[in-house]
Length: 277
Ligand SMILES: [Mg+2]
Image (cartoon, rainbow, N blue to C red; front, side, top):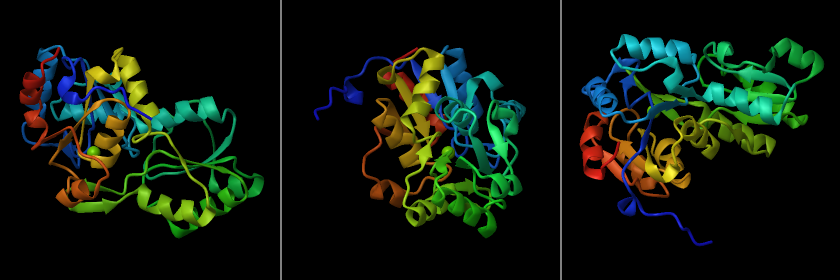
């Protein structure tokens, strides 16, 4: 199939920017050098923006509070999270389903309209959907084995993302995607993904801004889930060399980012070059 998509170099001015949070604006919730100033500059220029994050450990309200506390000019309405997108997906595609959630962190405030069952209820009366959130202490053998058994019995497998690792102040930590690969392989199913790299997640964020993918940039530190996934959805992809960035991951990726910049602090200069707002 031939693509009619315009190459980034042939595109018009940038009219919207989607921004990943962890590894781009912050690491372990501490602002990266120059990130606050860069976002202030985007705001001053009137650039429409949305934060799109696979963070599964905090609600939109808590993320907004953390970022505002660190000096970023953002509120909860600017933030789209994988858990919020997952709730919308479950309401649309699996209404009323009994959902067994495995997640580290409490995001129930962002899971409006989702019928959650705990491990005991799921074993007693079944689960229709197994939902994987973010990896951490709650991803025990027992929890993952229970998920495996429910999927084997016919429950659908939904995952908020398939990130392999993320950057903390101590180094890289293993994330959901690593466990998901094993679960998919063992149960011979493919998970329905609701956060990045799902095209629907980028589309929902652009919808809120009233922007067309061809006029939008996505900035992230994950070459696959942020950058190449956004490029597949028709956006221009911008990779930053902070957070989880690894040169070998970029080399191994099956695509090339449209732009690579040292950090988010360099975004205003890139936007000046591309034109926009
Ligand atoms: Mg990130």
